[in-house]
Amino acid sequence: MFNIFNRKKENNKLFYHTDVHCHILPGVDHGSKSVEQSLAMLQAQLNMGIDRVICTSHVTAGTFENTPQSLGDAYQVLKQAVADANLPVELHYSAEYRLDEYFQQERAAEHLIPMPGNYLLLENSFQQELLGLDELFFELRIKRYHIMMAHPERYSYYSRRRQRYEELHRRGVKFQVNILSLAGYFGEGARSNALWLLKNDLVDMLGSDMHDLDHAQVIQDYINSKEWRKKIAPALENRLLNDTLK
Image 1 (cartoon, one colour):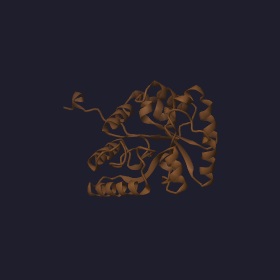
Image 2: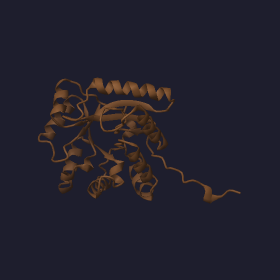
Image 3: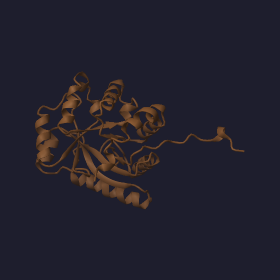
Image 4: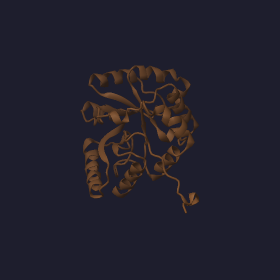
């Protein structure tokens, strides 16, 4: 006889299929440390319904001064490993660019690697907004790049002037919010900002920002939660641009 007490709880899946922010390329930042770890992280993505992954490794002055060569080499290694493992996932690579002096150097050298749709994933400082941010974004738009701000909810200085979110968004900046933030992983401040952005229709993309399998578990637990199923997913289901990046 069918026994409901022996039935395992099923994992819910995301309603979109493209992750626009993760650290799955092996050995290039403080994300995946090996090809084996990368494959396990990709399997976790597949389990959550993600079958198109844009790898966005850090490009940061002094710590992760990655180049198109270093990221391209890691991407080719992972792409071959995915093919050998027969994982049904479509891979792309770009970067998460910290807005610092190294970004300006790479920009001047025309070394930027946009993601599909010619988007650049840009990370602001966690201490204060970059001076001249509006001018920089204008110059990038002149070059036909689209701006995607990485996890704006994590910049605590915007908590005190949330009208700045609205101003940036009106100027064409797209906001990529982390599921980890919604889950409370980065603290109540980031979660509060993320929920405010959601309430005000300012969330354009979601990202895993996955660095390891612990992050994958937090995300899976959250999308199994009642809050995600009843509140978050219905509010975002017809809004997100993740799957439109071509």
